[in-house]
Length: 234
Ligand code: ATP
Image 1 (tube, rainbow, N blue to C red):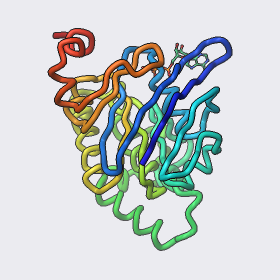
Image 2 (image 1 turned 180 degrees about the horizontal axis):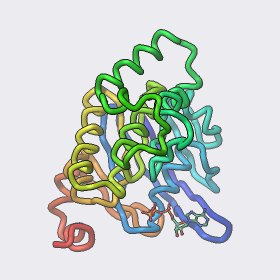
Image 3 (image 1 turned 180 degrees about the vertical axis):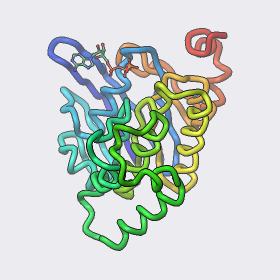
């Protein structure tokens, strides 16, 4: 479904991603793990059109999206749930959800999806007219996830969804992401919490200095001596 080949991304002279290649099949939950600065966020930004790659190729559903704009990528079915949630703080919860589907023209479908999300996250319904910036961190994460789902994506990119959340909310966030995958949406997730990421994922890529250094099923990487030592504190 998604194929990234030889991706290179630069910020001026800093080469953040060097020759990264990954593949994601329909219905999979794939994670990218790695230390700070390994190039995980940059890779997601390149896929979603927020950043122009210096080299490489990104193909989604058989279409080359390497040079596509963020809007075009969204139109093709990829939604991005960014690091730090990035809700629009002065807009209401409902308006944030509307921002997630600004490209859709099917008003009835949008209303249906909003009702479904409000039923799934009653707290968002309760706070629907409240400014998103006044929500707690966990509530903002639910909103950011819901906003991404409002575009009815085929693939969602999650960047560090557990960051800054209390342990019980971390668990809840991962449950939500797993349920999204069960609903048939393909998921690519960047996560510092390597243990949780590997437990959840079908397959995972280990990134180091902008390159994939190891790949395998979540289970295999959990048992891998190098991963255990470098990422799982074992
Ligand atoms: P983290 O887990 O800390 O978010 P990451 O694996 O997501 O790390 P990136 O955020 O992709 O890593 O950063 C990769 C490299 O690119 C780092 O060395 C970082 O300092 C650099 N970098 C990221 N954004 C910029 C920017 N806007 N300008 C210059 N350098 C940047």
